Image 1 (cartoon, one colour):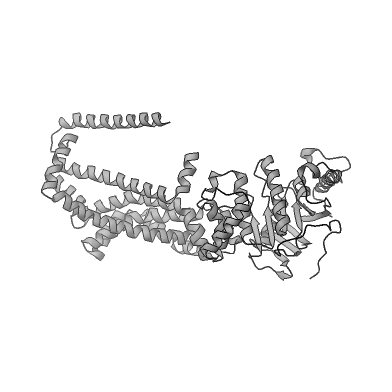
Image 2 (image 1 turned 45 degrees about the vertical axis):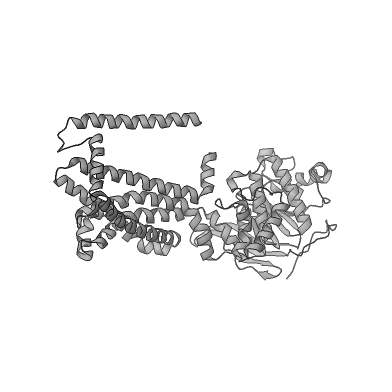
Length: 256
Length: 289
């Protein structure tokens, strides 16, 4: 079991190295104005850090991301749980949620700019709108897919509605909630970049615009690689939190 | 309240240590599924009484409505008619009744201890007190050492013991059991039956036990109510006058036990899987009393 996982990991790393090698080989043959390659991208990093432009952009982006994402998770979980548990709430709000979810959120940016300007607030709203829906929809699905028998354990003990909600509905929907949060991380990063490109040009999204205008393709790709890493890391972090918060699920899976 | 009284057949009973028991009375309990325009009659005017401390089995084939009847008594579903405990009509679930579910009714994210404490936690018992009561039940049901296991980490038999332990923390007057041993293997099942009889002998709670197994019903109970389906009705009320305490070795080889099983098989009717014994009444499964 252990040796096979080592083997699988070796294959994974091998595949990754091969991809990078092909990229390097191909990239070296292309005009640096149009494309770049891994070693050139790596070489661009120290320069960007030393002049301080990268850390500054990163900090600015993280602020937008953290605030927008946090609001979307808190509001999304709360609304999703309520809509899942109370048919009236779902009946009243389902159309609005579906309509907003179906509309390309980018198309709302002009409106957001009119309302919130070009600054931090507008960006937070864009991140929120990107990340909010997967959280709501998953939390609601979690409550709806909850077996009736679990609720009845509470009802048979004459638990109050609030006790049923807190002690059964929330923990039982937790796997769904976490799945929604995991999806929302990626959406939040997309929202952040879109906001930084289409409102006041700042942060990592702003850097991409700036570098590509200057044909500094290697620097632009540094930012893109950073964003990819950020997405993976955040998603991993959520998975880690998920495992820690649900030890019963972890052992359950291990047994299967 | 008028009680039909315990069958004369069993008088000799072990002295009870607890007062946690009550009489249960059903009058014209009727249940329909669906709306008024197209509804399915599931239970049709069911009436019976159970005296305090009595162990009664509700025997019937799947789909006869026996689980629905138990859920009505547990207060988990609405109905027409009257269900009263010690003369007081029930209004939804209550602390006087505990339910043991067929699928064990455990919360997968809670440990054994957490599951057993649940009933007391909901009732607002302080942590120390409920922990003490839970540990008492854990010791009684042989769950020591498994307190911090999650339900999926223990066997079905153990899980049902956790379900029973939680039900008992409330010191219920009436214990409602919905085919609690149907999902465990034969050996565990027999072991759990003896354990249940032992616990019942000590606490003397009134028990209403739903099962589709004739053998189980006869082995456990003081009285067997045979249910017929389509719509659900009580077809027969059969006293089980086998001496207690019972044991598989002695009880199951006694002639009265074998005769009761034969008799109940006839009452249940249409038990085609086992081949109907000669002289079975009619061929209709829907026969009424």
